[in-house]
Every structure is written in C-alpha cells, then in structure tokens.
Image 1 (cartoon, helix red, strand yellow):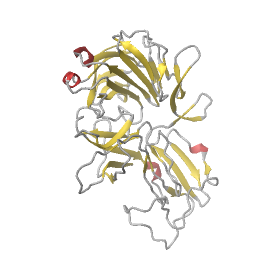
Image 2: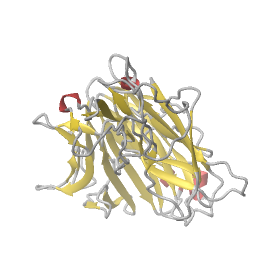
Image 3: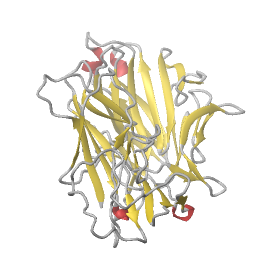
Image 4: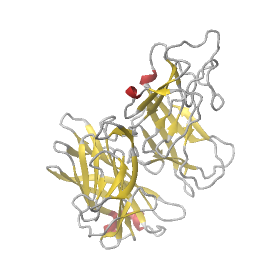
Length: 412
C-alpha cells in the first residue's frame, strides 16, 4: 500500500504568477508524530504526522472527522495525546533504514516513515543518519561525514575513480576520461567538490555524494559543438550488466533486477532566468565491470544565441534495490522535459519556473503498508513541505491532492 500525492500551485482566478518551489529530495520523509509540529531537515522534503493506537481503542462516542476533510494545523483526534516530547520512548528494536517508532504514554505508537533510506548501520552496527557534507581526509581526497563505507571523492580529477559510492549492490565509481590532474576543493555548500578546468583545460568537473549514489556536473564555458557530449566510465560490481533504459543507463543484476541507473539529468545556463533542457545518458559499451556512458544535451539548445554561460550539465547516479531503476518514490514532471524521468533528481520542483513558460508538478509516494492492520486508526495527519528555493518571498498557495492511481517514478 502506498500513499500517492501530487503538489501543484493552487488554482486562482488571477493571471498566472511566477511560482516555483524546490524541495530537497535526497530523502523525503513521512514524519508520523501526533500532536507535534513537523521539523523537516534538509533531508526531509515532506512530512506528516500520524498516531497509531497500539493498545487502547479510539474513545467510544467520539465522532471523528469526515475522511478526506482538512483539519487545523496540529489537530489530533479527541481523547488522544499521541507523541509527547520527553515522555514518549523510542523502540530502538524497530528502527530500520526507513522507520523509527515511539511508544506514547496514552498507548498509541508514533511512526516516522521515510520514502527512501535516511540512515544506515555503521561498522559497529549502530544506526547513523546520512550526512553528505564533504570533508578533506588525511592522505588526500574527501569523504562524507556519514555515508556507507566506500563513498569518497578523489584528490584529483584524473584519478581512476574520481568519485565512488558504497551502495547495496557494491562500490560504484566514475572516471572522467582525459581529465587533467586538477586538485579538488570543497565548495561553500560543503556538499560538492569542484575540480577547476579539469576537462579540456577550461571546463570544471563537479561531484557530490548522495545517500544512494553520486551526482556529477560538467560546467562548460561556451556552446562549441564538442561541448554538447562527452563520455564517462563507470566501474560497477561484477555481475551487473549495463543497458539503455527509461531513466538513462540502467544496471541489471544476474536475477534481472534493475538495481541502479545513471541519468535523470538536467542542464541549465547561468542566466538570471535559468533555461533548462534535459540531459541524456546512453550506453556506449561495457567491458567486464567498466561501462562507458555518453552524456549529451541538445547541441542546438547549447549553441543558441540567448544562451548565458557557463552551462552546467548534470546527470545523477542512483543505486537501490528497493523500487526498480532509481529506488525513488518521488519525482517531478516539467513541461519541456518529456523524455527523461526525474526520479533521481536531488530536488523536487513545482509551479511555473521563474521567467519561463515551463510548468512543473511534484509527485510523492510513501509506502504506508506498515500503518495498515487490525486496531490501527490514524488520529492525526499533517503535511509539511520544506521550501529550499523560491524566486521571491511572496507567499503562494500550493494544492496537495491524492492521486486516483499509482505512478512509477522511474518511467513518468
């Protein structure tokens, strides 16, 4: 069972305004905490609160709300207190990569459910929250503050593995053919490393680690024809076969399961109003564990007179054994991106892109099957979305709607 939602600007009689919302999508989270205001972190794109009675029934004679009706912020069913800070106790035995459970004083349980893994077991067997901020390490190179073993960034762009990710399938790494020995530096955000002028002597290579993979960007200074495509080499665990798929390049295990993908990219220019176009990834060849991939953008778009440079070309590698090619349960659609699903994008977008005619809609999915069972009643539900970017501070209404059917984020 899954809860499928769509986010879009609210309908208005006014003329269309520039409405844009970007949400961190590294790990959208369903926060199941009754009577407690949601506290979305930069990894929590979506949260809601639900209290699940585990020992006591819903009070007799208390009339609940009509299903589907909106309630005030923080609403909890009468007679139910739910989560209480300092009094509710976490049941650590039920902790997983996607769930945390608290037992509340009134007999209810509070579940925090994430659509993607937000924590992992370290070498000592303890649960650690993902932290993708990068720090320099002794001996050269960079590591994330908290990611599975094998996730790191090399000191120089010409390394055999300039970026590597520890995934459920094994370690996956990327090399940039022909890159110069440019030394990397952590950017101001702390989340990416830039290798200046590493490609062709004038294009930057930018890499960042994700909980389930990595993101690479090539920043080009002009629209020369040769800038529109380049090759990269991915080294994958033995036994994985690369093939072209809906997201881009897919990686398939021996049992036929798609466990990863490299694609879902977008390129954008440096204009005050960013112009975007989809990035395509395609398989060139595979020899053993090395897969050569071509990354490309529309050369006409890149060479257009209105293009403002530099242009960033940005594909994403995502590995997971949970839900097909990307492991994603969330995505967004954009009116000018019709061939490349955005299920591995690192942010979710909705509304009208500032200064353009592009329309975006965000779709989110949460597996709530663990909420279904005898005697379990939802006593409170609130939705909270963390806005990470907007072109103005003027408030804009957003509509959240349940979908009549499910969707596949890897093919939408």
